[in-house]
Image (cartoon, rainbow, N blue to C red; front, side, top):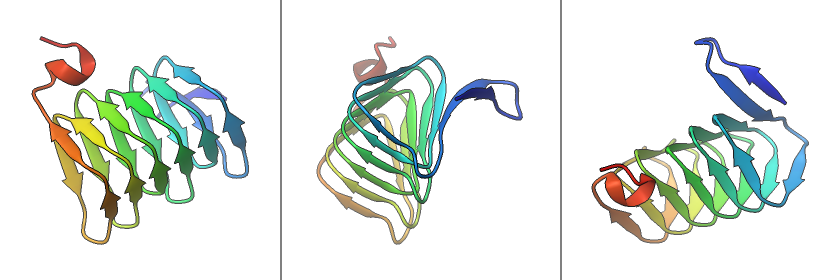
Length: 120
């Protein structure tokens, strides 16, 4: 389902109880409360809410994790891990924020923004 957020920017929403398998190509932001099994490529922010689960690689402008991600994350801006987040995989980002209580198992490569998103 695609909709617009309160600021008018379009986003795609995967609801609780929904399971999506395969490669997702999303032109804007993506909010996940269900389960995604496969690669996610988004031009905006990917938000994995508390009950959300991603089993696969994520490539986006930014990622905000409140639930569980198993797979590598590559972003041009920042990764934010909220207090109940679990990330098992490697991160490639410009900036990483990990709140107390979050679990991160992997390695992190922090570089200027041009490496992850092609910006110069």
